[in-house]
Image (tube, rainbow, N blue to C red; front, top):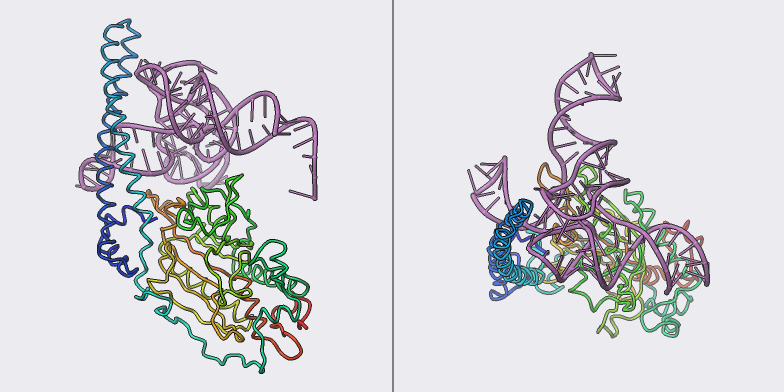
Length: 425
RNA sequence: GGAGAGAUGGCCGAGUGGUCGAAGGCGCACGCCUGGAAAGUGUGUAUACUCCAAAAGGGUAUCGAGGGUUCGAAUCCCUCUCUCUCCGCCA
């Protein structure tokens, strides 16, 4: 949620930002509506505050009069207070109506894109920030997509997942399960080396947490919901890990706060079916190591660059061809100010697969989370950032496809000590 | 799941209807004292919204959450949540 003060003081910038997100002129008027609602709320509050102050003063007077035994005078004032109280009810409700309307509208406004975000409407308009300069792996004729390789080498089984649970829940087996676990350990070890504190959070969160990181109300349909206990299965570790700092006033000395967490992620992915989601390309449950930072506003973009380097390093070590995209205004997530996507080349499918999304949310998320720090006497919102480092399922897909040989799948060197084998045959 | 006890500021802990955003202590910050430190001592030390051009200084709300009684609630009543103890169940 944007800060109201930002809209008040930087209205023109906000308008330009929404234009970059392809808001129509009509839709942009939401800003005026928000400011109007705020104006209404404020004037109602001033009146209410004055009313309550007067009631309080009179109530104190009544106390004194009663002590002095002047019951008649006290009763006279009581009726004044009662009528003040009647007015207060009305003022309170109009204040509530206005502030609810304001918040409702404010929630419909996405984050203002960073100035470097390219214009555009669709994924085709994303800017290639770092291209892959080296050659792609060349596969022997008859190379298989990863779902075929999975069957051949007994790495994972989607049909078995259907039996146990339903479509989109892969069952990893044998060396496939070991590969999965190896990648998790590798990613966590690398994150620890880069200074991220490891966190093993709950896989279910309450609605307050889901609201604070922005999954509610926007993405309610994307999360699995356990009605009986009013809990949501997390779609990403970002939710519980970032919420560690909900309502916390951070000591400035502790910036940047760096945390990493491995979790399974659960996504309903309602309405996405078809060939492009075959195999591990899109599943309901997958493993992911997430990196999260809470940073000082002045240095959050430096931290973002560090996160990009971290993710690049992982892909380099896994010897996977990848490129980095800077997302355009139309393709960026609702809450993000600047997002870079990492895509690995999936050689048999001959397509790029998104394996990481690294974003700076500036204060958009922290405004709902209330992650703040003291800047002198002022309390300011911190910046939050996060990125996948990395999402497992698609990495596995690319590793299988790119490294297939007639003898089997040759794993990159970095994984050998984790897996205990070099070849999946 | 059953029975009981409890929830107050960064922490501990007073406060059972009036001037209580809340005693006292600890912690923390700054000053005095000291050669330096400890001890001692003085001052300050919540958050949100809001008034004021800003600062200074006001106002309102907040004592787990929500509702109610009352002129007035941390204090009384109701609902919910959470924590602790005992029992039951159980990786």
